[in-house]
Figure 1 (tube, rainbow, N blue to C red):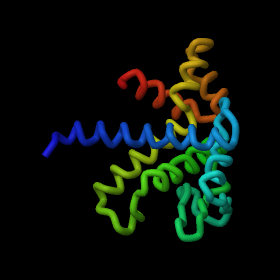
Figure 2: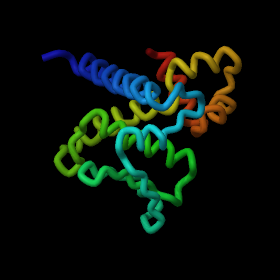
Figure 3: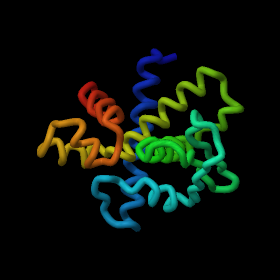
Figure 4: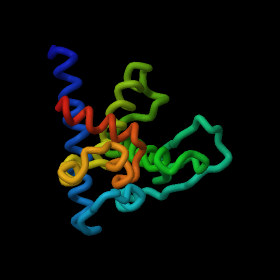
Amino acid sequence: MPPISLVKKKRSALSISTARSTLEACEKTQGTFQAPVPIEKIARWAGFQLVYLSQVPHDFSALVSLSDKLIGINARQHHHRKRFSIGHELGHILLKHPPESRCSSKEVVLFNAEADLCASELLIPKQLLDEHIRKTQDPVELANIFDVSPEAMARRIEFLKKG
């Protein structure tokens, strides 16, 4: 059995390559994306309707119904949180994760980390980020360009530095 770090590295690579291939396929029919990436358009292209829910607890972010082809988003959360939640749920869909109810607690943590990584690549594609980093290194300015939170941008930059 391979070491856990190798398995995690392969799963991370799968999350990133899945996001990149999705972006490429979507751009073939929707046109080339610029920052900010239109995550709502990608979700619709993937066949999912977005439903904004206002009668949910504040700590609820999102859910997906594969059978109904719906992604439910907490309408009361910050715009950046909603965008990331859409990307996260798309990550679960694209990576074909089973429903949380069928997963162990360790799998839930693993699958959520993979969905976050996929969402990060969808919202802040490395290729687009590289273009903008040539113009500015300021994470707050980059976050504004990509319409994500400064925290999400800082995590993305840190991840890419390690990579």
